[in-house]
Amino acid sequence: MGNFGLNIDKLNTGMGISFSDSSTVLGTTKTNASIFGVNIVNDEIQSNNEEKVVTAASLGYKKTSNPDIYYSDTQNSYFIWDETKNKFKKAKGIENILPNGNYKTDTGYFKKDGTLVAAYENGNLAPTKEAPEKLPDVMADYHGYSKTSINNVFFDKEKNCYVEWDQNSESFKKSRVDDAVEGGFYKSGEKYFDVDGYEITAPYFYAQKYGYKKVFGTDIYKDSEGRECKWNDETKKFELTDRARLVENMKNNPADGEIGNFMQGTSDCWLLSSLNALGDNEKGREILKNSISTDENGNISVKLNGVNKIYVITKADMDAAIMDSKNYSVGDKDVLAIELAVKKFRIENYENDTMSMNPLDLNYVKAHYVGYELVGGDPKNAIELLTGSKATKISKSADDSTIFINSRETSGTFDENFLKKYFDNPKNIIVTTLMDENQSSDAHALRFNSYDDKNVYLTDPYDTAAGPIAMSKEEFYKRLIAVDVSDLSSPLED
Image (cartoon, rainbow, N blue to C red; front, side, top):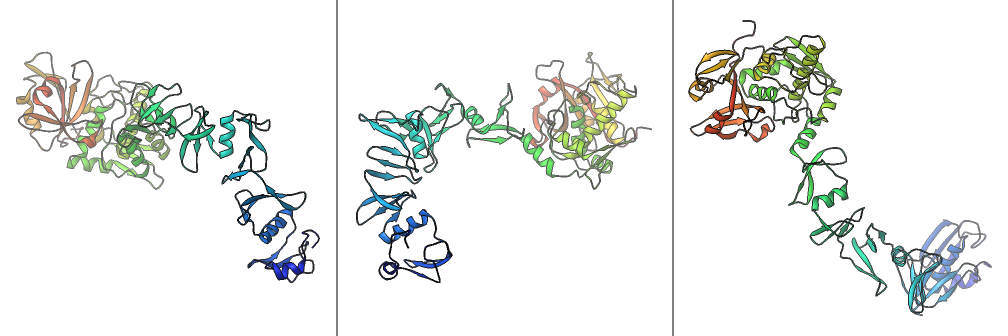
């Protein structure tokens, strides 16, 4: 018992500590003991720390968050364990002990291990040589606050708030900052500021916070996975765009031979509007269903009935195209597989020198640059290529008394009276091509759905889920330049 300076008899009879089954008490052998009703079974009491615990228990001292400092209720005093003398000594001047074990005395601030980091000199607080940083940083470290990129502002993780160093009181107070990110950007109330204190927008602030990258010249941001997002001012969050949500759906849903909703990517409205019209026609659905199949490995075979060719789109091809929404549609794997098959067909025509410059020819290729193979085409071409059935193209001429039908000039006026017989046939699939609002050289193909006394209803391939959009008849016929139509009843070889 020489290590503790205690008498074994006193321990057994007067202090509520008893030992049993030990040949060497408090030595290096394993001992079964009971200390104030707490059993220590088959343990070793060898170190100063263990001696400190036993001594504290014998004296009735309570633990604090600092393992070397104990408190006595009866003496209303703190005591520090002296490692060299293996005993407690009274600690004068301790005012409080933080949960992290650091403590303050009337002379300054100490780290858990007893290192003085800030002391009072002539009534002013200053860092010591052991902690040469700026005083706010030293005191933030003492309190366990985290640094931010804003000068003298720190984060209190325990209370989940920001605090700010007040030089006058030499203490921390609740900060004006409610949120902060790297680079010095911060939120205060309902406003956001950059490092220089200039006000910025909420999306710009949160883009910095969460790592979103703005797409130049747009209101689109991309997250860490490259997914397109937009800022929602109501929820104060970035949310996936409709295109990005469709991309996520495509990753998880297989091709099923049916045309679902999609959004156009590149300039292939001629193909996509034709697909949308076919997908809403009983015979068209049947043709497409029989033209698409998927094997057990996720590879998709697409038959282009007009040329009687099958193209295999591998799963790797599909996965790469799904992530390249700029150059392809998103939303439906069948539509994407058909795009890739038509692209392969066009590349094949270019490489084999079989491409045609006639838009109505099945081998027509407008752009043979890499990445632009799907750009430009004709709905008549698309309908015939996909189905193997004849389609008719009716287009406007410079002369109001004539029109073109499959490039042959015919008498007639390109208006509702002439086109009504096509629009009224429920068996027809119809794709219309319109000039843009300014009637420039740009044109766009849209699926024709129906009409009434005032409006024509069209589906835009840029967002088929939006459904038919209304356009006044006056606007429609002013911009209309071509109508492509087929009832899918006549095979191409006829």
